Length: 259
Length: 314
Image 1 (cartoon, rainbow over the protein chains, first blue to last red):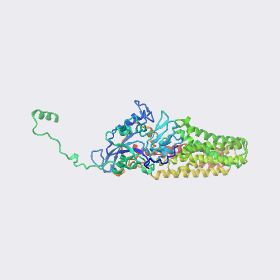
Image 2 (cartoon, rainbow over the protein chains, first blue to last red):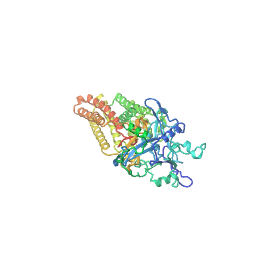
Image 3 (cartoon, rainbow over the protein chains, first blue to last red):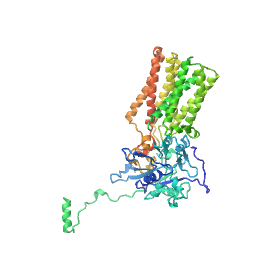
Image 4 (spheres, rainbow over the protein chains, first blue to last red):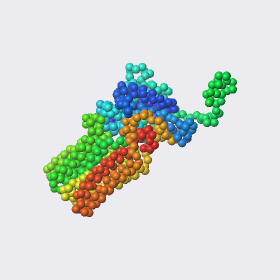
């Protein structure tokens, strides 16, 4: 059913909400999460992540992770020009596994569904008729249509890793979390207030994307920490001049190279 | 939003078909339409044909048309499923109405009751089509209270213009019908102007600042795209129409969809000798004008995902 599931709390009474916490302070924009995600998922639960013309003139393909880059605080002076207080922020974006997402309820066939036990939003590829309505209903662009299979594809939160008994316990996290070189992505149960991810959100002031839409995203984003003031204005630094005690060869080289 | 021709054709053709069906089903059994088997068969056939071709076009739009039958199961939550159910259910009374009124020429209880059921089904189906769009929160130009009245009025208007052309073809035009067409064109035109004024003046709640949550640092500017080539999101949701073209196309939609048919119908009303060519001209103009109007309905709709790709407003 594409109606949202009724609450099914765990034994200790809390409703499990698996999701990600993404730290915009530490993300360096390396795209490793996107690549690792593509690599795992093209053989995973929602495989394949079709690429069309991968080496052609206009490559196109399905990805569950996209890393955008924004400049925040434009009016405080551009970071691009090398001065000013605006902030360059790398911004990884994947499915937010919302609590009340319309991408599930608009589905006419029951292909799009939200799991009662952990809140993961999935697509049943055998039921999908490829009407694309769920992708229209997602404000975040988390769903991408596979024109080759004629069905909709989306992030599975690596459902085939996080419950996979064939993997070491330390590896039972989404591929994007495992690969991140700066630990900017954290995986856990956001329905449990004592979990690592819930504490991170509480400590760092984690926030929702587009709360005005009202889908109540489970994934949270951690804001960049305040910038440190730059002490020296680069343009007023003295020009570099060679020290006086250079030997003959070095003085000759300096003279030749200075012409 | 990408204006897919299959969907534009579906909403306009099925809209006109249901509008015509609504009028035939109410007016026919009441004895207000010409007592002619040929007229009844042609008009009912045109209405059901437009509906069937439109629905077929919407099925072809799917990635898996062979699975279309699954699309009626989730009527509890999905407006698309409700539309499918309403469309299929409406065929039942419509078939009874077509046989009893159009084929057998009856105007009794069976034709009357099935006609009323058909009329209700037609209105409900068009309302479901409108709600598919009006329920989508990420698209400000669709998620508003102007969309439903626009779809209902434009469906009734296009159906009425078609009916009027058929009536004049059978030399059975009546000033009451010309007047009904005038009223529907005027109301639809006002609803469309209201819609255009709304999307032109009321801004969407979502901005690059809310989309990224980075508004606390000030204004947010898109710096670098995640990918060098357009992906599905940009092809489907990132369709952009230049403001200049938008203004010109609105002018064409206004002229062909509303002004010209309005003037033609006034002419038909005032000068019965010119009624036939005038009503045919009105039907032709409306057909073209409403297709452009529907193309604009998609092309002018801006999805919040574009905020992640450099759009400053949606």
